[in-house]
Length: 100
Image (cartoon, rainbow, N blue to C red; front, side, top):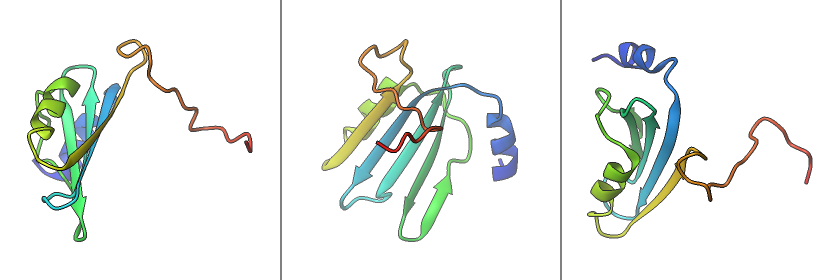
């Protein structure tokens, strides 16, 4: 699937979680998964050569992605979930900056 077609497929989906992984030695060094409310996920990864996008939507949830990533030694995984799925989630308003 071409990138433009894949991005068109993502438009209108609701992001229910984000998984970010960083590795010191393995490739890819950085990965970001956008997990959607319909049970699909889209992966982006990168290193010094740039950022790449997965070839399609995967049928994966946040917990499945974390389990896969944690099998890699030395990886740091950070998860942001929708507040209704994680009552302790940190909420940030990215649209305002009150100067504090």
